[in-house]
Image 1 (cartoon, rainbow, N blue to C red):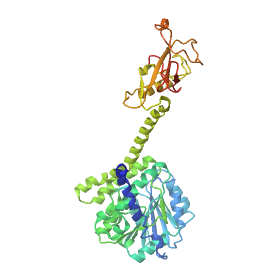
Image 2: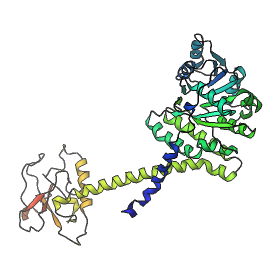
Image 3: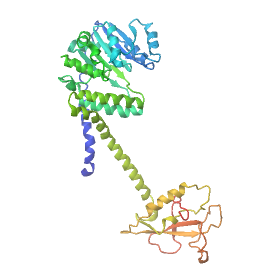
Image 4: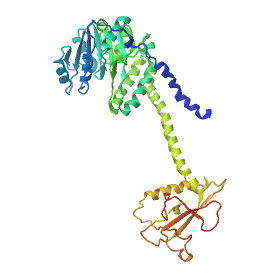
Length: 440
């Protein structure tokens, strides 16, 4: 028994990591909240009409006192700016910045964040994505953590909402390996850039430290700008902190399978290479590590599917055994197999499906293994059809007359002799689902 199951232990071992992953420490929700320090919340947005109102209204509902919200419309082609402007008319804390054209050497998101920072007035800058939703207590706890622990950059592990089938299948395959690789206890002790991780859904920085390292201008050409910004902070001697904030902020990153593939292909390929630093071999192999992890989890599913298919095929053969009296079946000519009530080849109601099923069943039954036990014998009886175009309701005689032997038969009657019974006329009909026409 152990020899049969030990290969499966390889897929059971990763579940041992659930214990350390279940430790939600440090938890931002446990930090005492602080108020009274100006904060600027910056949201870069491009074609986010479907979700922009959700994030803006969730932040405006914050219980924190002194903050402003700046939405940078990165040249959207939909009505993102119009929706933000409509809310801004009712709440003076919200400001809309219409983004300028992209300068040479800049990518879109760093440029939008840079413009938002230029318009900000707060002592703290919070960069957050348009697909997030903030709890009212989030800002107070985040500023409390900055004041208590004194990091220059705070980033959070957020709650990931997975709604569709593909989200629920793919997203855990990404976040679980990341959780193993970058636990907060390790990230918060990082001394080298490749030991870091940052979540662009929530990055809170001190304005003075942000300006000192050059802001987003220092990462203007980076696709994974959140990780690059955190690495720039570390290289400049700044302290960073990663905390759990999943009870205070939630996000739904991708909504379709296409978005999942496009988004994670970019983030995983570039992010893993960026984390590898200047080590060439690791930079080459790092993007494939998560692919191997995905295949690791797909192998048991593939093995299960193969096992089910094999068992189903064997089960179809075993279902014939009670009728045949043994697992071993012999017949003289599978082409003539004709179970149950005979029927004409040209009978329109039968179609081709029963014939095809019978042909496959006959091939499965044609096994010459007679090494042990009893063997049932299948006899093929040929009869001319007395009622063309109909299905006879009564069986035909056991064998046609000698004078009819040369006649071209058009109906086959196949039956099984009871095991051990050699008396004439003792024939048992096969199941009706096994059907073949003469000559097939």
